[in-house]
Amino acid sequence: MPTKKAPAPAEIYQIKVTLLRTDPPVWRRLLVPAQATLAHLHDVLQATMGWENDHLHEFSVGKTRFGAHDPMGAREENDECTVPLSSVLVRVGSKAIYTYDFGDEWEHGIVLEKRLPVDPNLTYPLCTAGERACPPEDCGGIYGYYDLVEAIGDPDHDRHEEMLDWIGEYDPEAFSLDEVNRALLRFQRRRKAARG
Image (cartoon, helix red, strand yellow):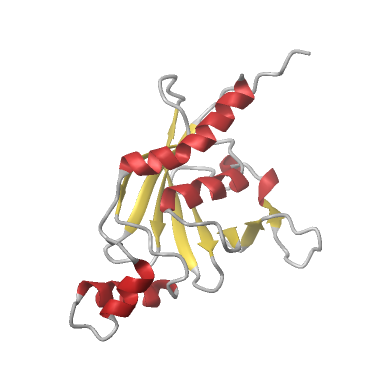
């Protein structure tokens, strides 16, 4: 039985994702198909930022919220699996918030920077730029993160050894475009397999 080929993406969105309240900012610039669902974007953001997908999340645009399907109906959100990115980021400059881990409350600002034609020489999603490492998972939110950075950066800090034992090697300034794009390969392969 012949397999259906998935249609090629009609448009690519260049988005900038910034971890809010970080100074200097932790950010990534991504190229993603406009018709990708918010569920797919969640997966891409987890890989791009370096999160471990251990916590709940949601997207919000104004007062409208989108999240994972809840069969029990306990959360009043739109199902992110059915919502394409193009329906929430409608024009250049459109914004959304992606919140990951409702305890630590990592908020990511998402801005549509450009609408681009598909480049047949590229495979999407793709990270084209970024700066700084994502905070470690479960470090206590933005304030816990800055306490951690202070402690590991100062050998005389009371909690220096304790924090190093917990975190191991961590450089808040580190960012590798190659490593991020390697993390995105699994999404590119899945899309290629679907087209095959």
